[in-house]
Image 1 (spheres, rainbow, N blue to C red):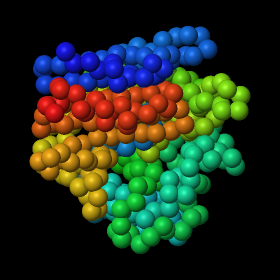
Image 2 (cartoon, rainbow, N blue to C red):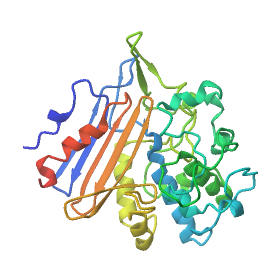
Image 3 (spheres, helix red, strand yellow):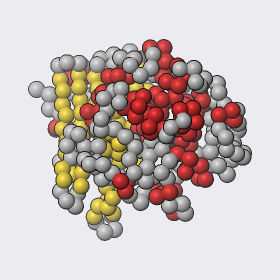
Length: 332
C-alpha cells in the first residue's frame, strides 16, 4: 500500500494532491486556514500561490497570439502607451514570456532576499492592479541587453498582464476568468484583494522568531495579485487546469508544444519550469513563493502523474514533492 502521509510533517499546513493515471488518487488538507479561530483547511480552501500565476498569464498571452491579436515579435514600444524611459522599446512578447528581456525587475531575486522589502517605502496597499507596480521599475536601467541571457524576471510578467489588458480592453484577471478559469470549471480560482477576501480563503502566516508567534502576511505582499502572480486557487482547480491545458481546450497542440519546450537556453518554457526525466522528456511544473506562501504543481504527462502541494505557512513543498516522487505510484 502506498503511504503518502509518512512524508508529510506533523505540523504541515496546506493541501497535498497526488494522482497517477486512474490507479491512485490522494487528496488531503492539513492545518489551519485561520489560525486564531482554528478554522481548518479543506480540499476547497483557496490558497495564495505567489508566482504560480505566471502560468495563467502565459496561457492568456498565447491565446491572444493564436487569435491573431498579438504576435511573439510584437514589441513593448508598439504595445504600451506610457513613457518607457530607459527601457528598451525593442523588447518582444517572446522575450517577456521567456525571461530574456533584460527589463528592470522591481523584485530582483538575485539581490533581494524577502519580498516584503519592497514595501518599506511604497505601501503594499497601493498595489491593486498591474500598472500600480510601474513606479517600482520605470526609472531603473535595463539589467542587460535584450535577449542576452535568461534571468527570471517578475516585471516581465507584470508587463504581459498590462498587455493583456491593452488588447482585451478588460482587467487581466477578468480576461483570465473568462478565458481560462470559467472554461476549465475553476470556480474557486481568482485574484482577490487581501482586505476583501471571499469565503474559504486561507490566510498566509509568517513565523516571528523574536516573539515566537505567527502573523499574517497582509503587510508583506501586494494587496491584490498582478501579472507577476498572486492568484488564489485550490488543489481541485489546479487539476482542472492541467486537464484542460493538455486536452488543448485552452490553446492548440502546436502552441502547447512550444509552451512546454525550453526557451532562452534554459529549462523554462512559457510560464512553466521544465525538469527532465531519465528519458530526457520534459516535465512541466509551475511554482510560487512569497512570505507565508509556497506552492508547486507538476504534471508528468508521459506517465500521467500529477502532484500539487500548497502551504499557507510557507512550508517546504519542494522537499515534500521530491520525496513523493520516490513513491511506487511513480514507477520507481
